[in-house]
Image (cartoon, rainbow, N blue to C red; front, side):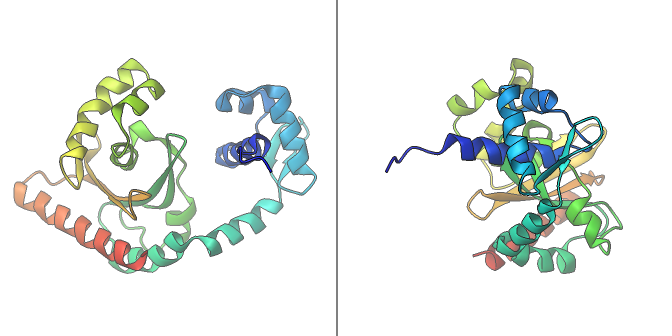
Length: 233
């Protein structure tokens, strides 16, 4: 039996992940461009998934997630120890006056398991499903997790302009446990990897600028990260 990865399976899973990340119906050519894949192959994969209810087509023959996605989502949540164990800690202990996020890295994109705006802690459904994936270089979570990789592996994956922006942040993260990223219009963001760099917890839109206030936020982040790390062992 061959020990090589099954490329068709890999492409099919990637195709489904990109499709469910779109906000609206998408044609196979557009999806193929996002994935840097041949459009004929993407169409064949989408049609195959349609046969088991994972995708459907609208009147313009664009693709949407099908009813099978709901079953897959429920099974994935049930199978995710990170999700199941982190959720109660976030509901109980995450601060309510800033953005709190928990995310993972996938294909240089951040997928948010939890993302809540100030004052929305009681709205668990939005915190779980109300935020889109984001390019890793735009996210404090993404940069904090990328820092676990070597520059030689990272640099070819980003444009020269993006690399100039994130290289100092990567270097800063490798020197400390928490990445602190001051952002002009968005306030201060900070992120700490957890679960052996498989996820990261972040606070964002921090408006305090006094050293004592930032230290308090840092301690809050580290304490919550410790709770998540302990619960997700």
